[in-house]
Image (tube, rainbow, N blue to C red; front, side, top):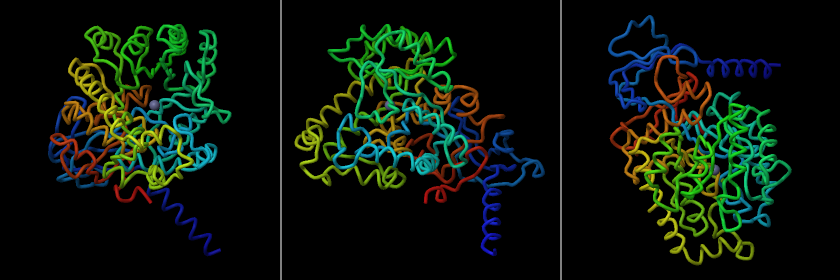
Length: 466
Ligand SMILES: [Zn+2]
């Protein structure tokens, strides 16, 4: 009996602690990357889950609720990763279509584990100051992930796409609810979009894979039908298209979002103009381009943030030398045998992708930060800080990078939520990251996190992970 009372008390304390109240962050420097404005000695008044007002100088104490001193701190809108996949863990076993390790860990066990770890993944995003994410494609159970996240306090806000509409199939990922669905005709595409629409996806995703058996033009009618049907339902379309001509075709057909960089050729003026004219948002996902190769060739370059805040089981799995020789797929064996070729290939990709990013940013195309986290070696949560490093290498300023990860990313998130995140303004969600040092001159400081606020609830950074 005694135990029961204690439990009830503990529970009510817990819920009270999580309930948003009126609070004010006093005396910090507020950075709004949307317009680059920096307000020193500002006060952010938060009422419930929303920002009531942002004010300068001394305020009437009676109007502030509980005051939290932020003197010496830097306050930003919470970061947004606009390209993640919750159906993938980031570990070595998460893409058997790319590296089949079923004999070491059956894929169905991997997926069961992923489903059991969602709260852990959500918390890792929050630990990194990431208060919203966009899952750009996965099985139909993705929609349950969105529901779960949106009902969980210690989780980012989640927008999702359902299964990817593709020119190719991936049987090894099909356990009955495949993340990738091969579509062969425009009619099939329309029918599938209608099925998706019932789940109210935030985006429809097309996996526009081009190779010698699947030229750009052969899949184009399916891209067109998918986009027409999605737009008829008021749903935007995001396209994976990493070659210049594939990306151009996708945008000509009406794509709203390109979910990766163009990596095969320098973008040309006509392409840049097309993206601008059509208001297309591009998400570069630079980090994922190095992580398959680096993992497989045993050259993984995880950042300190990833080592500290990534899931330790995921990180431990990435050591390919721990897999028995006879169970290594050829792709990994080859990479281990010749890491130089792998690293050269990664460099070649960046030699194209980084200047492309700089050119698009300079031209005023909307760039939204995103990682493709969940893919092998791309760690849910802290991968965003490696993405920031690579965006810096591309030549973007710290403020541009922060804008990509906040206000621009909110546009990709979309919907009513997207219209209330990514900025520190009256009426916006109180999703904030409080830093100990100033990221506006050094993007490396973006991970120097003191605390994270999601929906008006304050989480001291050190309290978030177990
Ligand atoms: Zn992806």
